[in-house]
Length: 383
Ligand SMILES: Cc1cc2nc3c(=O)[nH]c(=O)nc-3n(C[C@H](O)[C@H](O)[C@H](O)COP(=O)(O)OP(=O)(O)OC[C@H]3O[C@@H](n4cnc5c(N)ncnc54)[C@H](O)[C@@H]3O)c2cc1C
Image 1 (cartoon, rainbow, N blue to C red):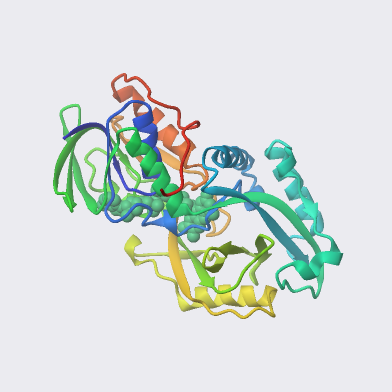
Image 2: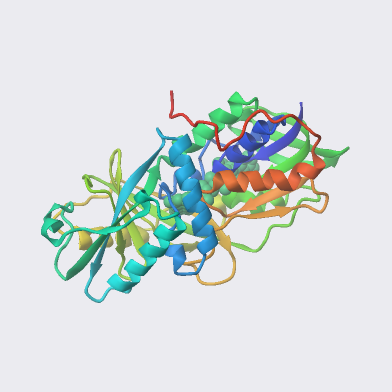
């Protein structure tokens, strides 16, 4: 088996890189140890957004490019990414008061290009009783703006289907074991449903929270940058939110979303430092009760029972406080220019990150005729 590019990990970045490489005309093999989207790519908040909160840390460029990708995904994946209203209630004594929110939402609209759908409004006081049971005591204002929502696993699978259509080979239940230098590239060993070796000219470590561990098994690969794994939990409960996604402030000032979900209401997320193997991310009792308290506080008349809880791991730079850190992806390249690693990043910007990874590896890849442009390839929901 000989390929131009071998990708490790079938999360959004792995399938995105496989799609980008196949679209550029390269032969591609992707190895996924479990199922597509098994990691963070099925455990996210499922938002395709610029990230309003990142304006607080001054990451305007990151927000602007994510807003641009949001619009592109709304166009190329209409059955998978939907524009959604977001509601931000502001209460007396809130950390972010109406003035701060007006300024933030104004800037967010500006970074989105001031298009019609980017404008925010104030939900009229006379209609507060139509806000899905939201607490109105001490409520000062409710802002409404638009971002987008997806099914993260379905999006990952759709990008994988697109990559396969372009000729990429994707092996699930197949674990990358190690890569050793061989000729002008790597010899990659894998085990699982399929067992064997493959030769490739370039290797991409898109292992998400497992990337640091995978990096240790790549000869002359890029050393992993210092990263911290931060756990985020979501809980799912019964009910319906008819007006959109609520963006509230938890007791510690952190933003928490209450979102409509096909099976009820999804509430998240937490930010808890994770130590230990990436496989051992499990929701803690404290995280579940923190989210339950937040939901019950804002929707006091609505009964809540947690039906299920799921934990995902974010890969963030190791320095600084757990919350509010830079969410951009870091792409590192090995000294031989033949292996790259992806650390962190967002579902929303997977296409840009994947394109950047490929651009870094291209000097070591042969010339090929491009088959397609990922900005124009339609992503279809499951057949
Ligand atoms: C709680 C939470 C909420 C988030 N919310 C949002 C959001 O609302 N919007 C947004 O844009 N982003 C969000 N993100 C970020 C986004 O989900 C991630 O950046 C993205 O999913 C990471 O994708 P990935 O492909 O890098 O990693 P992953 O999805 O984790 O994929 C890594 C894959 O590698 C596989 N793997 C591991 N070891 C091996 C091996 N040895 N061989 C083969 N395969 C292996 C794993 O099984 C896994 O499938 C959130 C993240 C978290 C954790």
